[in-house]
Image 1 (tube, rainbow, N blue to C red):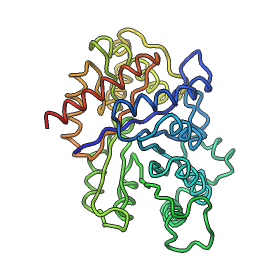
Image 2: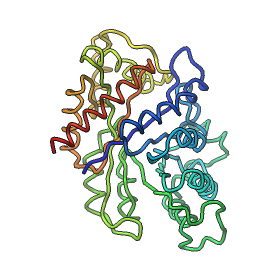
Image 3: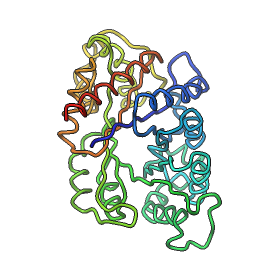
Length: 332
């Protein structure tokens, strides 16, 4: 049966400071858990005024303290920014705090630009080339196989669930070769979704960690009591995508009426491509959108991204999306 999970970018909205977004993590994670989602993930980004999840392990810990059952973790950690040993220690610590609940999704992108990579004291190009080797080394810090000659404390023996994340074909190929679960970032880069999933399933090689391919894919969804309200609320996310794609990233702006109609046709076409894996509307509208997404991808898990300017609208959206998904499962 397909599972429903949640991705939180810890967005900072206009008029707020990062601390305000971070203080919402606990209440949002608790609400996501209460609504029955399977996982709560956060993603590492650096140097962006509108995203407050740079210290990703600390954000995950905040979510862990606010919850008791839901799986929590990274979607993802950008491994080229870090030593595998340090990540093993951080996520081993998280597993010690929240036993059996920790996920470690790994990405090859920097989650930043070259200036930030330099500030992190990393040679991003070299580290990106070393990504497969570093994934194997990181897994070995948890399992002890192969012996890397150093003990991660905490870390060794921690049952952290490791994933490969991606928005290109590289991650699909690597996840298949290593026998790991795979998640595709189709909420912002959907163009290669179908081909990536096909490659992952076709080339999957069973491992000691996973016997059969297990795939997830992300989609954006905003649900509200009326379709007009959902479109209005979703305009904040639309503005944010346009700002990012046109080189003007910033905080999540307030919604505006009829935003799509105000766009230059070329920008509107670009936004349409970015949001092809999205569903905005009532609970019933979103249920139909999720159903189409599952039919298209046949994924084991749908990961929902649902940012809003108004925190109350976000909690309402989270609730309605969960109800929409539950209606599909009951119907099935």
